[in-house]
Image (cartoon, rainbow, N blue to C red):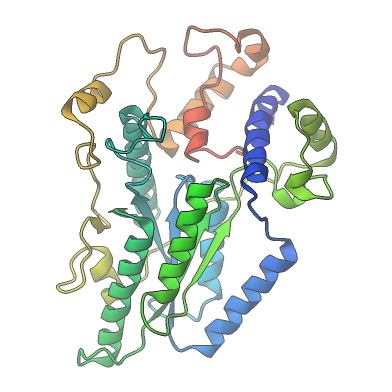
Length: 372
């Protein structure tokens, strides 16, 4: 990676890791993670339920170099092969606690302004298109994440049980859901994670689901940091951090996009009937492989929507959400225009689309990877 771009991304990494330190997020050691994996494998052996892998996209709206997506594929590969466990279920939730025109912070500002909401919508739409091109799909839902996952697991479980039993009385074999998501360092996301973990373990009596968060938002892996205390040992200023990690750490190579077969949706008709919204008894409102909310659905006023859809001509460039647009900007700035060579000279400029990379909107939502 060119030195000048690496300096810019180092700042993003440093800020992210400091957030983890301040929020006191506990990073699992490699040995603990391996132990969890072994426990999950052992639990699979003890139950006859069919494993269902759910890949929950949040701030990682891309297919390239996505640790969470790769971990979901690995989870699916470990499961006993059947028409439920083979493949994954990608999901994105528009959570009203974070996105919505009527959601405000304690200081009185909108949590998510209409321009950002439009960028998120474009990013989710692009993610769905890219998943569909690769033989999969994306379940999009509106609602609290724990409610969505609890209802989804219960609905799919009931449909699969009825299908397996054959007479509809619900005595057949159900599902064992495994939800994987990119780990986030802040308190609000951590509380939601706990609620989702609880919902997949309690969606029915005797449920045996699991929840796993996977770190993937930084240039360096947490386990590779050159500090005995891990991220708790990060210095208070950026320059000492950058100097030490550049000398002692290697940037992990980007992960490839998983194969089409590995991220395909499960073939089971009962599962697909719920995900597509075609189940007669167990379809979920505002949640399906075809559903996509509008800005109006998300609670924004018509004035706000008009403002978002008719951007000012004073803008230096058009910011379009999504992995496709993000990669296009990387190609344009670094390779087509070769602007890295003058980055130090132009980075503090205030006018023009090319005085800096402008990567930050796509990095913030994980549309492009810092390691790419």
